[in-house]
Image (cartoon, rainbow, N blue to C red; front, side, top):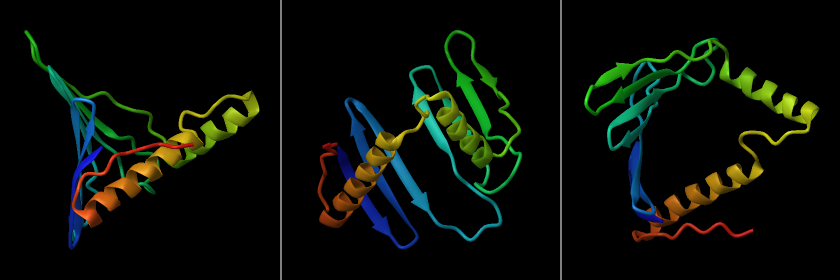
Length: 136
């Protein structure tokens, strides 16, 4: 369910609910000479902070910061593959065709992305929560 969604010039914020877990989406526009995109997932004992490179930048991996809490806290900075994400995605698709396998992200995933985006916009326009429903 999209529980809240609001837009303003240059950005928006939306709160979605997945069972008992909230998901906050925010987007803004700034005049900058750098790319600022991130995904942060919080857990009971830590978090993962993922910062992908600009989409068309070749041979740069995402920056990943893993914080593990608990009895002993630690920060980890795993390194990804130094390759162009678009090329890796295209190669994965070709390999799936050759090997007759399902891709990691299929058409159903894309459909669900569009449904969620539409429901975020509906909640924004109507000013009230919007139930996310995937009908096939």
